[in-house]
Length: 475
Image 1 (tube, rainbow, N blue to C red):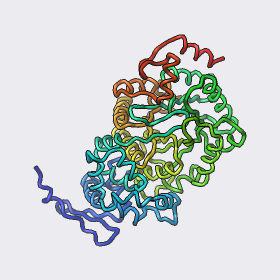
Image 2: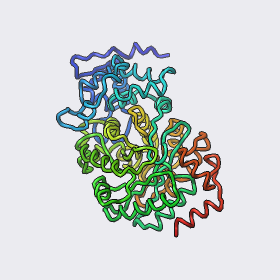
Image 3: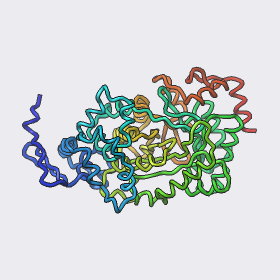
Image 4: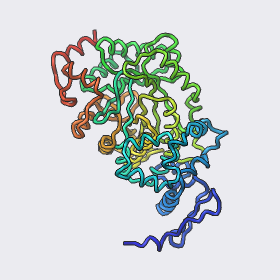
């Protein structure tokens, strides 16, 4: 066994902002928390593109060793983006609850990892400290955790939300039914929707990415889904993934909006590139709440995120992409969403180069979101120019199922013909539900069984009732 004392010296920090460690005869120094976090990140192409990645495995190890000794309280004292320059920073610090942080306030990042992995730290303990955690704290601890660490801790944390059904309960796995069409053809969308329903998918949401982001297109698709849901009394919710301003206009025109969607990022500048700010998101949430369309809950927001979004907008402020991603979860948390979806491999290999990086990022995102108290799902996906394939996605899908992911995507054939990327199929939910003994959301599960679509939550059936559902839907 190697004697670590021969190679490592204790950190020398001449000032509050400088971290230094010797490995053998080589000294590694890092200026401030932002650089330390970036250099401690597992390898990924986006950080290399941004020029913030560690230059060697040795430098990465040095940064991780130093990061493990950083007190969690330092992340409150040293904002990564100045308070006066960024509204996401202000949100993080202003919403921090010291009472929830007391249990962890004396711990370092490494000690926090040990506490998370302790047998006695259960879901209730994680829930009790969630409001005391900042995104930077959870990003930091994730960087010194193995994949199995991320899975184990995330599996302890259940985050339950509700609108027309209840999502995130133990032993449950939900699916977003994603019936996109390249021309928003209502017959094509209806066919994909019925296909998904007859596979037992759609309890998270029936969510359409419109080819045209317009009020008219959104209203047409909203009415299509609302008629289907109301006619067959399906205990689920719909969402048209248009811009938040489009949704607000549709609400003002009396359209049947269940959930309001928006992509969000971890810096004010990146959100501005999306055409949003915190005030606009609050306006949208209040507008959706005013419709009072939920039956078992009032979580009305659906957010999507993805590592690399801040860098792609030249708005990362020198931070690594995973820390920026965790900061996006602070934005989501402020608006009590029904669903938060990390679209992990969608942005492309410039940010997550291969299957290994996509798998690691998916586990990080799910872990960080769950620790912050978010109902995390994952679009297990990749683009065709990435060094990844469906086997990689099967691996990530399985790992996220073990980690307790709230929901996954259901795309016809796992190939989205409108967005042009590879995701997970309707069939994949049956694989995961069977192998892990999971079932759909309880209200949706009951509906599926009453209509003869599934038995025991997983086994597909073909009955007169299910055939009638398809016939009536196309009338």
